Image (cartoon, rainbow, N blue to C red):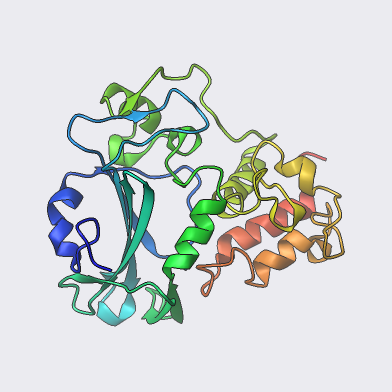
Length: 291
């Protein structure tokens, strides 16, 4: 139900949204190729306690905004906002809200949240697809199965040079700006790998798989978090049969089949990430790098 944390119209939160700190995750979630604007809003004078590197603590009153937009050939390749997802840290924990933008872009209205909403869209290349705006239970499912409720704003995800902070490292910039309290790590978390493509593949799994497939939930009996991704997938059997990643054989690799078949991740792949699918295929065919 609409309340102070989630008013009926997104415009009622315009002041908070305007003062939000933009950020961009190093390993973002794919969602039908939509563009995303991400903002963190902290209460005045408050900081995120980053002293526990694996479980940052956000003060009550924290709000995250993530607006999804499509660049459409129907509007002369103009940008149209589609939905805005909002997380609010209340005194009792995190709450979620989803706002649906009007077709004319004038405002967005709070979605009741019981069921997902199908929004037909056309992208810049003229491809028609149906974007599924998630229900509140779906929001809870992804965020509450993750090791921490906040996804995409962490030491690992901020450890990247980003245009939103003038091309500098976001993690360093946010510590310097006083948004994060504690000590800047001398060895900030990063995805490791023998070459850039391996790091990209492992990072993609971190951003698109590990919020369900992690040490907390072991969805499908599988942990795909970046430190253990290679050990848990290369030449390893799937609980459903077959081999997760069979070097040299992408078509025989269950992990590749799930992505290329459009069944994983569970949300936001009505329009699949064909570029990454191609990179994943090439990586499996040529693994190990330099071999």
